[in-house]
Amino acid sequence: MKILSAICAAFGLVVVLATPACSAELKIFGSRVTKMVVEDVGPQFERATGHKLIVVTNVAAVMKRRIESGEPFDLAVLVNFQTNDLINTGKLVADTRADLMKAGIGVAVRRGAPIPDISTVDAFKQTLLSAKSITYLKEGASTIYLDRLFSRMEIAEALRGKTVKPDTESVSELVASGEVELGMIVIPNILSVPGAQLVGPIPDEIQSYIVFTAAVSANSPNQQAAHDFIAFLKSPAAISSIKAKGMIPG
Image (cartoon, rainbow, N blue to C red; front, side, top):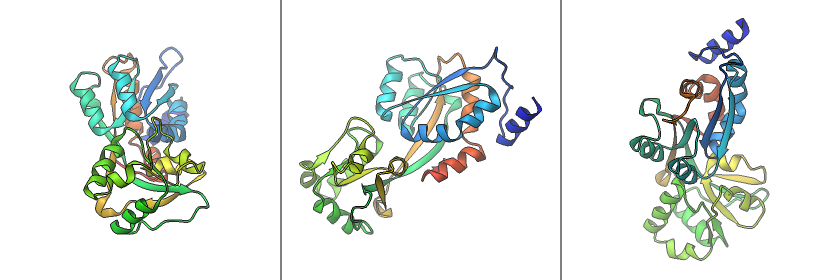
């Protein structure tokens, strides 16, 4: 018990030490970036509290629809505007809302392939136009932004015929396999796939940061434990993991 108390104190958590009778199984809905962080630091929380963490992932928009359909879960880490929508409809608890991290959009190529020039907006534009094929998500926060960006850059029509938009978070995998030449998705997603090479973030002048925001399910039977885990994701241990995965703590 003394060891567990010390661990909890180190995390800066205010939690009740779990016993087998009160430990909870927390179902977390999110996208790949959520799973990356939870897999890294979640075991520390599990050891300290006795709770078990189960992460269910897909494109954030898909997870939002699963919540809206009534599927049970304990907490969600989605894009900020999606979390806000679910708070407004009563699916998530407003006073548990917390911005956890944000990620910029990056460009990926297959590891070992020539590195294209994306150092300026013009260079990025020419690289897109020169690529044989490009890929970004069919639906996602980055997709909304990139579609609008390419329209503003007046290259949307030129890119349309060579663009692959997968339903799942497989942009980096498509690039790593050589099926597509150039991919665009949030940077941690690229870093999670060994066969994909991060060229770099898109130029600062046109960069957009995707904010990932957590909140507890209004119908969760484990609201306190879920709230405690959100607090843990703001702790030094989690912040270090977030930074290591190419993100900025929220």
